[in-house]
Amino acid sequence: MKPTTITQLLVNGDCEASRRHRLNQSIASLAQIGKLSNGGVKRIAYSQEDIKARNLVQQWMSELEMEVRIDAAGNIIGKYPGKYPDAPALATGSHIDTVPCGGHYDGAYGVLAGLEAVRVLKENQIRLDRSIEVIVFTDEEGSMIGSKAISGRVIPDPEYYRRPDGTDIQTCLTRIGGNWNNIAQARRSSRDLAAFVELHVEQGPVLESMSKQIGVVEGIVGQRRFKITVKGKANHAGTTPMQMRCDALVAASQVVLAVNQIGNTPGQQVATVGKMEVRPNAANVVPGWVEMSLDIRDLSSLHIDSLLEQLRTHLEEIAVASKTQIRLNPCLHNEPALAETYIQKAIARSCQKLNLSYTYLPSRASHDAQELAQITDMGMIFVPSEMGVSHDASEYTSPEQCLQGANVLLQTLIQLDSEISS
Ligand SMILES: [Zn+2]
Image 1 (spheres, protein in one colour):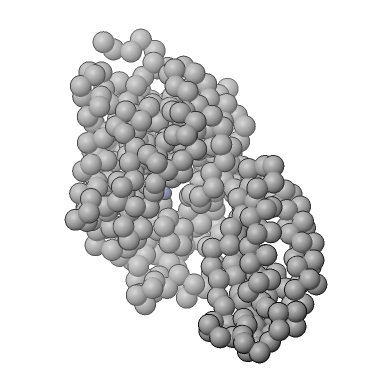
Image 2 (cartoon, rainbow, N blue to C red; image 1 turned 180 degrees about the horizontal axis):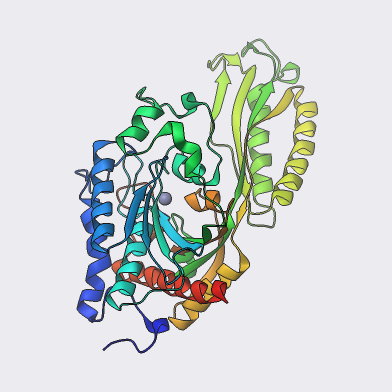
């Protein structure tokens, strides 16, 4: 049965049997490229596998009669022209590169669901007012150079982008049809992109633990990273009496607990010490020096500031009590990227219409959407990840869940088209 209105459109065609088939078939086909013996996928950016996958996606775009181009950063941009092709487009998409042992869904799902949404519009001979762009961003898992080029935030020094194997960025981009020298031309603005909506697997356990089908992302958390150095005094572990020690590791242990404590105060923040180096790191020496990492994330920059203020006070107390010096040196500062309220509402309304349960949540992982938020209105849709696992061969989201998310994406794009036009 044909849908009577555009707002009843569902992905994957009309028949129930094929509905399960089409989107998930394309996910499975793409996962064949770079397939590992453990079931995972290895498609490092710019590799032969990445290039093969990029070619397949371009072929699928061409079959949908999309206008396909590669920008200077190597981003693949497929455009399904709207009735007003010069109006700012609605964009969706994600990435198809993976970590060295990734799964089938991270990134690829968002790209293929975007293509499926276009496929449904095309087979129903529907053109929205605005063009829809499906974008495959270059090297999300590494430098995020693709989305950073679109937001105009590429670091001008090509050395920064040199690959671990020594290959320079000029060579990498040439391989995929880009051009480092023209990278500034990849920059976009709200004049040609009205909004960007990224569909992605959650890569965390929240939706599954709450038994929710869809996550309406409130934004991508800000992230700050510090190096904490604790300076004590190395000395003989046998001859130095306990009360005369300046044990850097004992102080550092209290720092770890203090970080954990601010992480556990009311709020949605997370705070982690994930890395530690002890010197001289010998069984018979009182540790004289410790360096550790601090990673803290939240949707609100002000909240992060206030947590860090509390932590600093705490560290001063620990330093005095342990007769050590504790220093906090910043090494990374990423501001939060908030999703636009009207896009969150459009996603929530799509869920209501499709009878899907949903909740609002922050994204605590980075995504290309955070760069797009710099230049246009951004929204993100999450579907559950089984056991919260991602960046692993066992990453799994069921075919049914993949369909649900893709339907929300399709309906959100349709809603945004009528909302933004009016
Ligand atoms: Zn991803």
